[in-house]
Image 1 (cartoon, rainbow, N blue to C red):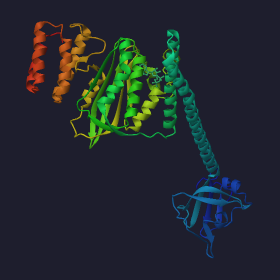
Image 2: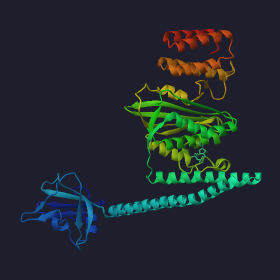
Image 3: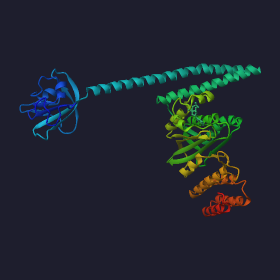
Image 4: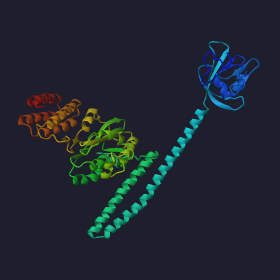
Amino acid sequence: MGEGESGAFSAEDALEIILEFDRTGKISYANASARNKLGYEELRGQHISALFPNAFRMTDTGFESDLSFGDGTGHLVIYRGNRTCFPVEAKIKENADCPGTFICMANDILEREHLGREIGQVREEARQAARLKSEFVANVTHELRTPVNGILGNVRELLNHVTDVQTVKTLRLVERCCGDMNKIINNILDFSKLDAGKFILEPRRFHFRSMLDYVKAQHISRITEKGLDFFMTVSPQVPEYIIGDELRIVQILNNLLSNALKFTSAGEIALQVLRTAQVEDKVELFFIVSDTGIGIGEADMDKLFRSFSQVDASISRKYGGTGLGLSICRQLVELMGGGIEAESKQGKGSTFSFSIWAEAEEEALPEEPDDVKAAFMHMAVHEDGAVQEKGGGREYGTPENQEALKRHLSRLILSVEMENWEKAEMFMEAVRQLTEGAPPDVRRQVLRLKMAVQKENYDKVMEEYQKLGICDTSF
Ligand code: ADP
């Protein structure tokens, strides 16, 4: 075929360079793209080794090449008539329609390589800028710490000497402001370390329940000051001692409890801990922090764990905060091999749950079944084991009460079926509380059911459960 004609493979207008050459290496066809890009006066008749000197050698009979011809592509360098060159991605194969001739198809990848290099450069610059920013933030916050602690120290010193009530009040206020400032500084420092991937966990052995008591002690007075109830339950399956980063677990719990406290003006706050899995000496601990506060709208749920994000500006004005807390919690929880989630209904309250993996010293105990875990997500459990349904439901016979009863009975039966008697007793206690105002025959039947649960007698529980259904048709 001749130059300028449409080739046998309809290649004339193709964007890629298309060449045909014979056994002797002589080019018999070059498409428009080849003619334009390679700048030869006449491409036909040129030897293929002139275009690809690194891939083809001219011989007495034709050419030699180390390339494997076929459908695979490779990177080659193609030379123009003026001996400048550019990289191509090329495929060379024998022409099936005309044996003894070869077709070379080559794409100019100069631009792509340029682009790739530019992208790499931009990416590197962005990485550098981010690193510089993180270092700057870390330095500035660190520098801020010194004056804040200076003020704090002096205020505390003054507080030792001052007796005037108004001055003491002012100094206490300054002390509190410094405390808040330190919290913000610590958050920003943690955030920049986590952001830069420089955060290191410091695991050590600690007594798990003492850690929870410490967390509780930090919040309980403000919780009671606000007139809220606080419930804390730890499943007996949670080991006494674990090896984990205590400080960071405390930090996550503090953040979730402070938020719960900040956004709740009536009702209760609950903290529960379950052991949800064990693999050899590693345990998965599942924490639930729930409140009956203002809740979060559905549209805002996905913003929660993002850095610097607060649900809306009016909330930040009213309640303060940096919007970093939950993002830090998420990153810390992920470093501990777990995840964090939130469930909420506007005006009804929020439940934050997270899991972490830690080392345990004790022998494996049966795990908490998923259904029980899910059931726990929706209720607050009293420290003594009693269960309180959110939003009341204590008054026997009301729709809320009947609904709560139904729910607790089904959880009770679920726990019995799983032979988790400890859980069953908790749900039983809730059923007992919810039937406190019931007619005497119902209460008696509930007591019989309770005894069967306490005896851990499966058949008896099922029997008494059936009877309970018969003795009060309202649920
Ligand atoms: P901040 O330090 O501003 O509280 P967080 O990351 O801890 O930052 O929380 C981000 C936002 O998520 C809060 O400003 C609030 O809008 C919402 N939020 C977090 N916890 C709760 C909760 N328990 N109830 C209602 N809203 C919450």
